[in-house]
Image 1 (cartoon, rainbow, N blue to C red):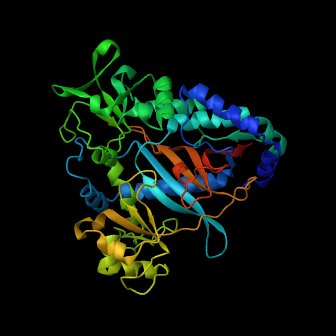
Image 2 (cartoon, rainbow, N blue to C red):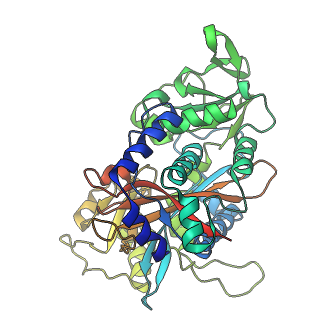
Length: 439
């Protein structure tokens, strides 16, 4: 944390500035932002952000280079959602990290979740720009640090960021033939991001349920009902929402269509919470050298099926996770129970009991994860006391290009969980951005 900036920001802050921030976001997004925006951005060192970003690259490259892991993950894709023409790698990746105190008392990042699915790339850039404008961050950084505030990673600036985002989403296609798809997109909380993406890249926002097949092509209805062939789909529709809402699509996801996916849907399953127990295990090396130790940024995690069978429990205990004696009354206060394929923290259970684990049908126990519960360290000083945060790195992986950490977002909270829905009726919490100084 950059303490100098933090203290002066808090001293200079006024509620009127926050009101101006929300009004500016409404104006630039074209619609109200219906999730809570934090009053403040956070100020981090470049070394911290770069180190966290490299951890996400290291983990994702380990997974994409492991055919045995990918084959196991592919089996977890629900029937009917194994989308044809799977790409060799994801176009989008997000990695969430918390800061904890390690055994030496030092602040250290720990992985919360790794997900090969798009996030709010357009909205986050606009949010950070609004923070910069409303709070005069250029002047604050110059006065206090003789530096400028930066929010883009990998040496990107505002122009090159949007170019990279356009290359990843649109590729070489006519933007009119590229669509952003979601379930009922105009009633989603992420509509500000959809609007900004459409505005910046010239693509259409389309309800995935309205896409119509025509021969080997997929089409959408443009102005006046004109049917327009789709060349590329920027997919924001989450499979578990399609399943939970029993959405009936007009086209078969498993059929091979003459269309490209910007963010192939299978990668939502291939790099997800499903990967974490694999990343916890020693990594075998093909050259006969001893296995690599589990990556230290990954908290110990096992599938419920393995835990109840015995080996998973042994693995957690060997990793130093304290567990109560085995009994039906046991409460696992050091663990979180997580469904593998859910979004925004849905279904996470604190303090799971052994009886709850046994109540999961045996055929579904591989769909749940037990992960060591992490104690987030409150490090952001606010008028309401120290607040904890989670940092998310948003990566872009354009076709034929490299994996780029592109931008970060932050979530501030004082609740049990970091999501904006879990910190209602609180101030100085919510969705935020991260800035670092550049000379």
